[in-house]
Image (cartoon, rainbow, N blue to C red; front, side, top):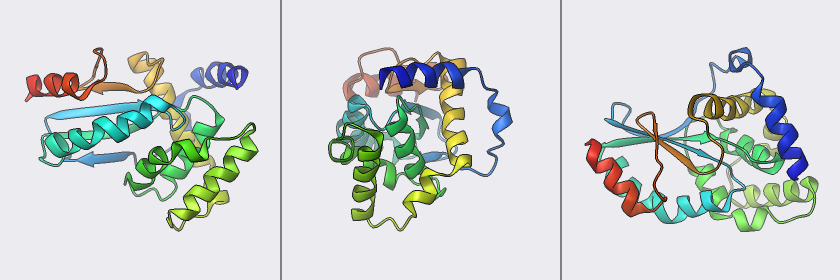
Length: 194
């Protein structure tokens, strides 16, 4: 898996994101479009720390800032491996900009990420997504080149624009959040910008 990651990064970092032509794909965004605070979260669906963010930090962030129209959040793709890439394809498959599938995958991460091979992980991913009744065609999503390009474009942008090298990484109003990722620290940083 580590060898794949190195090849993955070297190959895709040198691609030109403009060549993908993803004008019709929506990012996964929540909150007031005109909010003063814009938060980008670069994450991988196979990253346990990203799942912790979704389970333990995001709910308070949503309640205190996003639902009140003070902040908007965009979940950016930064897959760390092939399983993360495939899961991101599933999260974007409906192309509706909604985060329900993304959150569902993080809450069930410990179930679908089990397996020694990508084939086994894909079977687990398919079983989990079918239980969620999202009414998507798993194979069609996994094989969608346009969605794949969109995901890889996010990853390339993250490296080039923000020097992302780990997940989750938060960008608040175009500045990297560099404190330990706790809700207390995040809340303080956001409150300073309101």
